[in-house]
Length: 399
Image 1: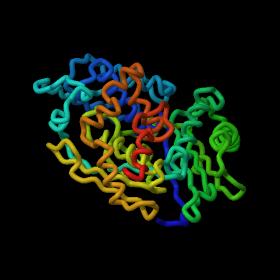
Image 2: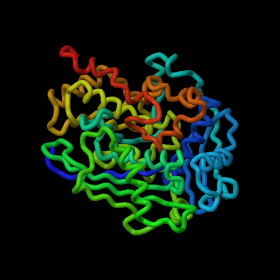
Image 3: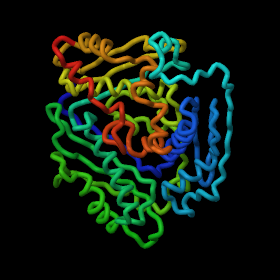
Image 4: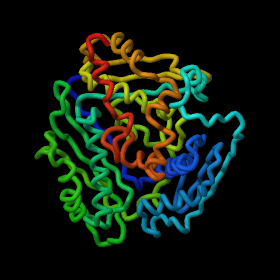
């Protein structure tokens, strides 16, 4: 494991066009599953200035007004009509309604072991999960801080502390590591769109963001900005045009921000817009769950779990463990314990995380919250794949 290095991670706020696309796609998934927990749905989204394109494939009894879902989502994000009008935007759709033939509406919790073996994956993927001891969330510190700044930007706008902020902002945090531990904040970059304040200057923007965003984001942190930390606020000048009026968006283009900030590997495929039976989404959650429990058990300071699936199989064709030289036991031992205590079959993942029912439990707003608040770590609620309930089992000497 590299001991002394600088690492930088980026995050975006909910109004970044790529994030808007992810949120819209997941809002559609939520609405289908809220009405029909056994729906099969995949949605992709692209947008530009006042144009939204939605492609959806689904097999479901649910009745969903997909353009209306898109418009409500845009409105909730909070764009000014001059930036991105929910009411006047053109929503272009392309739907493929798939046959309901062969659909079995049996909850995975009620399936026998043999039935779970018959619930096979329909696409192939190699997915990764990661955890490390850098933060209480067991995530890399750079992405935790970048996301925290992004949340603080959104909060400062919504609470009216910095009302002229656009929903479209980007954050970046560079952390210096020494002997494998976070030592100092090297740099902070905030790219903030603004609206309604044509006379606003950079100095006022910097002052407001220091007070309402950077200060609160680092409150209580051991590693904080110091006198040598470089802080950049809109280094290319003011952004009076932002959001879809300035740049386009597409589902799945923020995979690093969605996962580990580039600190660890990810599959590169979109997480958002996919229902519970898409293994390329849910395997990311299963792999994270396993890696987090390994670190929580004290078996390693860093752990990566790799799960590879192929079409027509219920369980992964390979499970790989890497601890980057930080393990307290061998990687082969960890792998054996994981295979004993974790069930990586598609149906078992859906069952153990209750993935079909979560939108209903959260009144139709579960998956759509993940792109803005984080698929991993301290998100908007206690995510089921963030539990460390199997750490004691993994750490037991007789495991």
